[in-house]
Length: 74
Image (cartoon, rainbow, N blue to C red):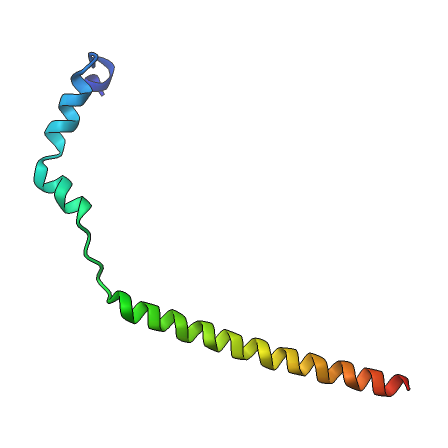
């Protein structure tokens, strides 16, 4: 707490530069994912197709229901 309250102008730069060295900055900039991005794309594609199929089935059921309502009105 004293370091913050008694900080002089420019000393914050020294704290930041001494906290991070070149290797820690380099490791933050180079991030290797723990999953295969291609597998993730395929998974999302499959989920999209499944959702599309469910939406088509729902649309068909709504159309059938509306047709029954129209038949009953005649």
